[in-house]
Length: 476
Length: 122
Image (tube, rainbow over all chains, first blue to last red; front, side, top):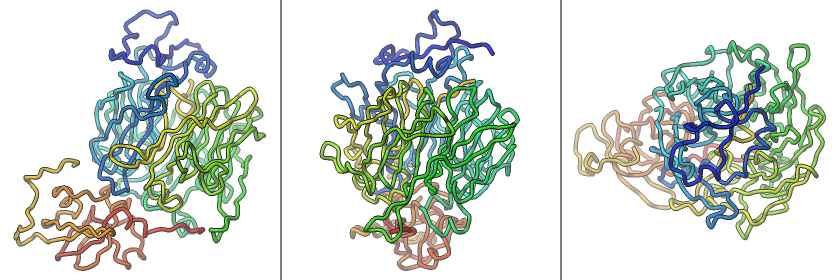
């Protein structure tokens, strides 16, 4: 294996520079000019503090008759507009439900000269439309092209979710349904010109789909399971759980061959396995999945050519005076710090963000947590802004010192569990993390209020940095 | 789709034999009336008239546009997969794939979709 040294561009190099990534015309000192960083440690060392965040803002499922938008949030503490949405790129249509999104390239393409981490692929979860946005000017992103739903339905797929780049410049998107919003889901591949290349998987290889992560050096990809779009789109119905309409399996793929080689049924301990995170070090077969409904963290790793998976963190239900039944924690997002030392997660219903020491991956040890928002959070307002939902989508700075989160899960599910989220809008919050001490504390100076958007209160979902982050970078 | 062409809007007085008048009623008391042509969906007619209804997939899978039929009749042009039997029995319909067969009155707005499911533990 040859280790190339890649170059990561900083906000400071780029901000206010409308020239699209002009550095690529220059000689530079590090060798190969692919996107990203040579190693996870290089990402930590070379990345400067994030000064810009891209955040999904949405109106789908509300009476605000406006399109969803890509929000550009100013994270430069020295700026006059710190912690404000400084730009909104409205989608061309209403009703998309922007949700997760990703880059055209990451550190896995570190060896591909000329490729840049520059285009965001922003799917509409409900519309099945895929927007491609050029971030050459970081603070003023613009549309490159839009893949319309019919081009997606042609491949009998719908409901795009997770976007990961493939190491040679192509893009893979997990699709949760067929053209009718039923099962099976699959994977859609786009080429480096953002044209639909076709279906990556063999139809029927999996039934349900959700998130995925690949670890190319181990020739493995993991995909998880939510449900058929027609099942989860309208909201969460216990009848569907009883009918077996929700997922509980991990699908391990031969990455090169694009075939499922092992399926692990997690049973009741792994109901609705959502976010899938391998450790960042390309040598590792270890990783975690958050089983949202069971509120367990599943640890997986390979032993004797087979993957094993078992719960390693279990969050207990809690009694609430206003609820007939105990309230599950609902672990809706997890992420692994770039140094693979900590697993962070959010318990959306309980109202808790937490960090566990995973330096021994099979035996996580609780480091710290913040009790905030949700049904049990100790902190229920920030700067006088009432928190009307729990912590949800997380993003961590590359150096592991700042954790940010938003509070919306999915429009119809928000309506069931935190109905005020749609009326008041989401917030984006931040905690300062001390990775040396294993502690975190809420930064009360930081609040981005999506309730104050010009078209009306908006939900906010996934967060990304321009220079890569802990939930998108993969190494060859 | 976000900027309906006003010139194309069917006027209220459109008496074309195949058009049906659909009254859209929000829970806050607001109402709008749109003319829906034969085989046109209620959502398309509303968009054409510049009336903003919530919607998502436009294929009957997601229920974002859910409305309740208060009077009249309409047909779904493809299966309303997002609705369960109990929802259909209660009169819930999906304007993104539904076309009226008579003049209709529909309860609309994002709150209607919230009727389909509740917090199962509370």
